Length: 283
Image 1 (tube, one colour):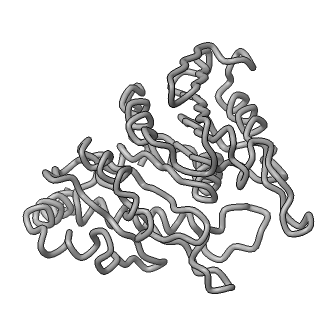
Image 2: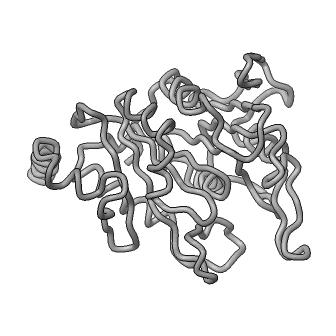
Image 3: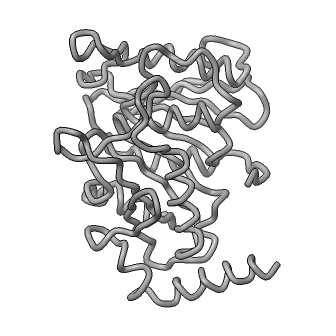
C-alpha cells in the first residue's frame, strides 16, 4: 500500500512540474534514461494521471527523436489525450542509426522485451501513464518488433498495431497466446512487400504479411479464413475477423501507397483501440 501511494504521489508531482521531469524527455530534448537504454516522451497539453499511451517503435536506422519529428502523427496522438513514448533501438554496427533485436533466431543485442518493461515502468512512475492502457505500435522493422512482442508476450500491452512490418521467415510456428492486433500495410510497399523479399543474397528473408494474418487467425481461434467485415474508404481498405475467441481482435488495413505511415493512420488506430472491450489488468 505504501509503495502504491508513493508511486501515485510521484506521478502527481511530475505532472505538476512540467519544467522538470517532463521537459527533459520531450521531443528532441535530452532523452529519458533507463538501465538498458533511452526513450523520448511527449504528453498531451493537459496531462492527467492515468492517461493512455502509444508506445511507438521506430523503423530501421531511426530513433526516438526521429519518431517525434513526424509532427502530423505526434500531434494527432497528443490531441486525443495520449502520451507518446518512443524508445530508441541499439546502434547498428555500421554506425547508421539504430535497430532492434526482433527475430528470435538471430543474435540478441539486447532483451527488447525487458527494455520495453523498463521504459513503461519509468513512464508510469514519472509521468502518470496508465500501464494497462498502452497501445504498442511500430513502423517497418518497428512493426516487426511489435509483431514478435505480440506473439511472444501477448499480455505485455493492451493491444498491438504494426505498420509496414510483420514477421520474417521462418514464420513463427506458434505464439504464446491470443492477441488484439491491427495490421496496416501499403499495397505498393516495395521495401517490405506484402509477400516479403530476400535480402543479403538470401541470408535473411522478410515474411509474408498474409501468412502473418493466418498465424493471428489461428492464435485467436477465428472460425473463418476469410474476413467477416469489409470497409472501404478512399484512404483504407479494411478487413475484420469477428468470429474469434472472446476478448481478441484482429483487423487488417491496406492503403494504396508505399513504405510509410499513411495519413490518417493514427486516428484510425486509436479509434480501433478505443472501441475494444476493456480487459482485466494482467500486471
